[in-house]
Image (cartoon, rainbow, N blue to C red; front, side, top):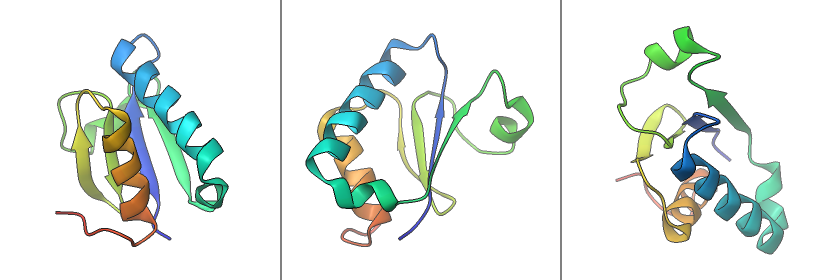
Length: 91
């Protein structure tokens, strides 16, 4: 399993939607709960956020590779988790 890093902001509606999709997917796939996951509020952890190359939130990284940036649908969040599980390649 690879680590997922999510850059977000508490006030971002797209981030809230992505987190809702994430919660739904974790309920459907309890085995994904073991994936190492870190959520970073870019306003709180500014130095960490500034060390990564992205512009829009939410942005997902898997093992240091950016795999999604900006508005995310359920399919996008699912893809992130499948990449972390090694089921898909990070293209």
